[in-house]
Structure formats: C-alpha cells, structure tokens
Image (cartoon, rainbow, N blue to C red; front, side, top):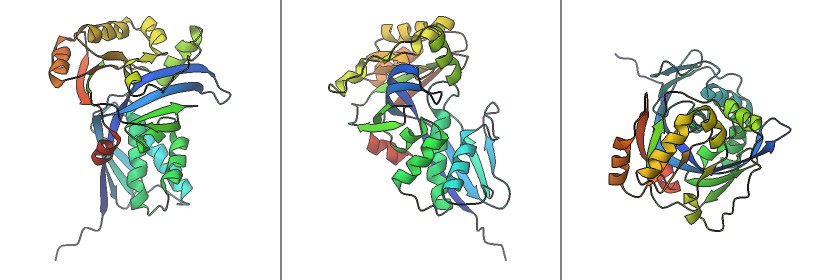
Length: 293
C-alpha cells in the first residue's frame, strides 16, 4: 500500500512594482534616506512554492544568478516571522522560486518575494498574526516589503514603509526596458549623495490619480550620469508615445505607461540597445492584485 503524502504545500505569486514618483530627501540617522514615493503594482510576477517537509530551510531557483542563501530576502522574511511567533527554527520548509522579475532593476522583486514568504508561511506555521502584525514583521525585512502586503497604488513616506493606500489608477499597459546592468540600491543612493542630492520637493496628492502622469524620480539624474542608457531609454519611450516614462526606484529598469496594448506593443518593438531586455506588463488595481497574489 502506497504511503500517503503528508507534506503541505502553498503556492503564491509575487508581483513587481514601479515607482510613479520618488522624491528623496536627506539621509536619516538610521542610514536610510527620507523618501516620498508613489508605488504601483504591476502584473509581472515571480511564483514561489513552499513545501513543508523534514530537513533544513532551503531555496531553489530557476535563475542561477539569484542567491539562495541568507542573502535572499526570502530567508530574512522566514527568520523574522519565526521570531515574531516564537518558533525556534525556520527548518522544515523547501522553497521553489520561479523568477521572472529582473534583479537590481528597481522593480522590488526581492521585496515582493519576501512579502510572498510571509503570506505563505503564516498558514503553514499556524501564525496567529493579523494584518498589522504581519506588516510589522514586513518592516523588519525591508522598507519596500510592506507595500506588497497592500498592493494597488500607495503613497509611501519615511523610509517608504509608512503607507497610505490610494484609489486605483486607471489601467495602463507598461513597457519595461532593463539594460544589461543592474544597480544596487546602495549605489544609487550613494551617487545621489555624491552629486549633492535633491531636497525632496513636496508631492501633492490632491490631484490623484491625474498626478500619476507627472512622474519624477530623484535618483534618475545621478544614475543616468553614470549610465547614459537610462536617459536614452526614457527618451525613446517618450518618443514612442508613452503617457509617462521614468526609471523605477533605484534602477536600472525604465518604464513607460501606455493607454493601449497596441501602442505598448509598437513601443516595445521600437526600443533598441545592446543587451536590452524588454518586458510587457499591466498596472494592477488593489482587488486584481489580491486575486493574482
């Protein structure tokens, strides 16, 4: 008689984000910068499968360049959740990560994976945490992680993790252009400081969601000064009819918003550059985000 498989398995998706605006202020005492940002979820996504089984906590990934040890935020999310619920170990979980969100692109892929980890392990570990409790754990993992427990569009201040959910933006098609290089968050903010910084011009949300098309990223100029392809891609997207275009987060990915799939397809075909990766996506309202993840 065959043995019954008693393993428990949870599969979740982790959707990327773009920054519709990013204002950067002075460095804080904790080493972070003061920011004001509008984050928007898009349907580009990773898939994570968590299986409860005997043995150590392990991660496997379809992308060889992605670390599968404690450098991965999946590890940190599991560790912080285990501490929060009084669990002695993170062992007994195997994670399969199917990666589609490019790394070091400013799309929040690692943070999205971390939030997905919290959502998956909470039921596997019988964690009795409400949304506030899970959000508190997310803040320990990283400043972008709490957004992925909210989804849709949200305004972030402080480190970016003080969140105000916003009304859904009207749907846009998104063209993403990822150069052949990545940019670490630390490098982008370091260049911002080297260049003297921009003192975080106030962002008014009174005109939201119309204000979504007034994109500006204070990290874009210092990054583009080191990598001219960033500015070139923004210009190409604007010339191909994007309603708005900018670098997302700390880069290196550049995005363009389009009113129709046909315009987005034409723009994607027109983009050119050595080693350029072109991806297509759509913005997600909050309800559609939660259906997807």
